[in-house]
Image (cartoon, rainbow, N blue to C red; front, side, top):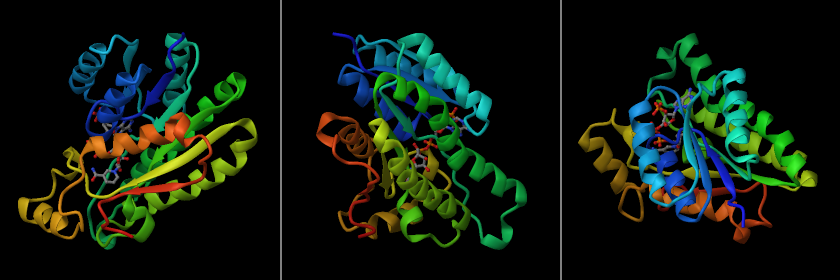
Length: 245
Ligand code: NDP
């Protein structure tokens, strides 16, 4: 039987890498996107290859519509279809609102929201042509409740929740499920800017008393993409150890 296929933006590192390995372990062909870190992407590809599936890495800045489109074209070229799109790539910026620059504003919205939007725009006709598909967007608990000193990041992640719900309504008649995962504090390089005390404090504030792992998020993403999630659309699945309830 033909493998299913998945495109994961930001698949070189962190949560995206864990998703890529999770899908490969379930027999999916995998295309990972990345923007700068070719070495990390190659390491992820080497890991995926152990599962004997087709895989490739593609450098595309998904904040740019043309590059997002090229990422999906690459998947169509490699696999002939895209069953699942995971819009995971994202960037954060911790700063007081009064210190956020206009360039920060445009960069975060273009990457976090534009990335989801443009990549989805490119994949939707392909999914419709194939009779359906699954799109999973990665938001954040800060998109649900807002974080001090992360106003810009919180705004982009809240936008992803609104986008997910609107897409779910528009695309349900085309048999495309659109859902969103809202992670809590996950142990990845995104949090490397925080010192040990801050990370310890965040762990203490998490009722389940630990940081999340990229695999915690990959499990939720895979569930939403699987048959088990086939009647779920427009949902925000919180995976945060109880930090936000
Ligand atoms: P990392 O910083 O570890 O990895 C980010 C990934 O996104 C990398 O693969 C990076 O590629 C890619 N990327 C960044 N900018 C672009 C771009 N313009 N075009 C294409 N790819 C890009 O992040 P995490 O794994 O921690 O986070 C993944 C997602 O989860 C993000 O959306 C984040 O906001 C969200 N999240 C993370 C949380 C956490 O605590 N870690 C909590 C809540 C949500 P490259 O390797 O080339 O730089």
